[in-house]
Length: 319
Ligand code: ADP
Ligand code: MG
Image (cartoon, rainbow, N blue to C red; front, side):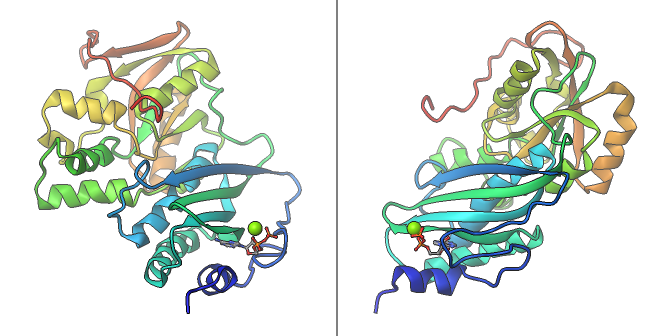
C-alpha cells in the first residue's frame, strides 16, 4: 500500500506540540508571542539540481534545509522557536522520508526549534521551510546599522563549500579527507545561532553569507549607506584552502557561496566584546576589514596595496 498524504505526515512529521500552543494537525498552528519580543520570520526554498544534488544523502538534506533557515535567524540575533515545512515529493519513499526526518529533527532538537505545520504535495523534489524566532524588541541585528570606523568580521571559514561544489562539477580534484571536510561544509552547514545571540548589543550590523562574502557584504554596505576596505590577506586561512592556488583560494573565500557564516560589523571599542562573544559561542571569528564613509568596496592586501582581481557574487539567474 502506498503511503497516503496524511499517513505520511503523521508517521514522519507529526510530533506532540511542546512550546507551541497548537502544532501539526489543525488548519493553523498557534504560537504564543511573549510581551516585549518581536517574531523573526524567514523562508528559504531548496530546489533539487539548484541548491542540492540528487546524490546527497536524505539525512543531510533534512539538516541543510533547516540549517539555511536557522542561519537567517542567526543573522538577526533571533532565538529559534518553530518552523513549518512545505514539501513537494516525487514519491512517498519511506527510506527517503525516514532519513530526511532524522537529519531534520536532529538539528531542530539541537536548537529546540519545533515543527508546527506545513504542506505536503506530489511534484518535483522541493523543500521550503519557514522559521520563526524571537528577539527582544529593538535588539534585532540588521543590515542597516554599520557605521564608518566599525570593524568588519566574518565567522568560520568561508570557501569550503565551494571546494566541494567544484569537485562535484569536475573542475577541481581533492583527495579523500580534504573532499570529505569540504563536502560536510556544503551538505551539513552549521548555522551560527549561538554567535548571533552573543552578538546582540555588540554587532552594529549583520548578514549571513549565502551568496558569497563580497556579494552579501554588498547588502550591508548598501543598507547602511557606507563603504568598506577589506584586507584579503586577513581572510581566515584553513588547511583546506591553503591547498589551493592563491587566486582560487581568494575566489572561493570571497565569492564561493553556500557558506552560512555570519558577516558583521562592530565598533572599534568593542573588539574585546567581540572576542568574548566568539568565545562564548565557541565560534571562530576573524577581523577582515573596516567600514568607511566613502561608498564602494576596496580590496587591499596585507600591505594596503589595492587588489585588482574582480570577484563576482553568486546570482541564481546569472550563474
Ligand atoms: P490544510 O489543507 O488545512 O492546509 P493539510 O491537510 O494540508 O491542511 O495538512 C494537515 C496538517 O498537517 C496541517 O496542520 C499542516 O500544517 C500539517 N502538515 C502538512 N504537511 C506537513 C509537513 N510536511 N510537515 C509538518 N506538518 C505538515
Ligand atoms: Mg494543505
